[in-house]
Image (cartoon, rainbow, N blue to C red; front, top):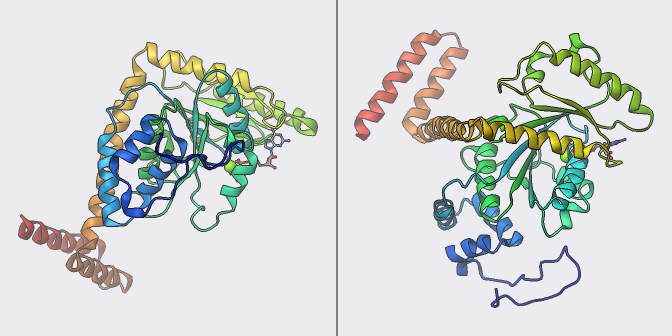
Length: 354
Ligand SMILES: Nc1nc2c(ncn2[C@@H]2O[C@H](COP(=O)(O)OP(=O)(O)OP(=O)(O)O)[C@@H](O)[C@H]2O)c(=O)[nH]1
Ligand SMILES: [Mg+2]
């Protein structure tokens, strides 16, 4: 690191190793060395590189991804979901600081489908995660949500790998809901936690099966002040609803906790539950199996998206597709016939290409 000039010190929010480099100078080794040295700023640059559409940078990011070693399985990947405003970022601030005390290096990837249109929530996150965002052992980054093929899911998966390469061992993925992105966040994490608002669900009838199945741990946040009683009742409702549900992992009874992220209460119980779950799945062998299946599922889904997008880039195919779509709108054709015509056009393209 001797080559980087130290510009200033004292303020942890300032990159003391920042040196201006003309765009073309950076080589693959700049990024790979930075990751090895656990440099958070270079990690951030690596994630920015993923977004680039510049041909040279795309090729550099391909080489960067290729340089990452095989999965080391030394990290924990935790998904945190919940409706907007339930307190996800505030909860992550408390949990993140707790993790650091335990010796972990947490990386937070906040998926915000709206972040490419409004930068507001990113700013919000910095204030909600005030201490964590300047802590040298933490890394916080909104996941890019626009750009090349694959979108959010593609970037998140690649960003997780980059964070792990930079020595972050507790990856937290914050998202406002399951099923928001092309590939559900549940498919890229080892364990998922759903934050609930006091009063959410109200009674057992109001609690949908989809919600129950979406998480391994439930946490009723904002259990403080005047909302404490309501939070307690919500906890009981969820606890009761969960009695009728068998978690897919044998031996795991999905717990419900109360917590106040703002007052920093209930965090250690949630941490213990996370670790109990991870231990359980490691001991049963399902941790590795789960990740293996995720790799396969992810590749399959992303490949389909990739094929779909690339095929539609072909002007002939796009033309046929749009003509058929129009005919359908004007009710001049039925959908099975349209599909057969599409199939013919595609076969023609693929046969000509081979
Ligand atoms: N009383 C109370 N308020 C809380 C608690 N946790 C968060 N809040 C408040 O709830 C509001 C939303 O908090 P955030 O952490 O931004 O919620 P979020 O789920 O990340 O929101 P989005 O990222 O916009 O989806 C803020 O005003 C917080 O101060 C808590 O434990 N108790
Ligand atoms: Mg947030």
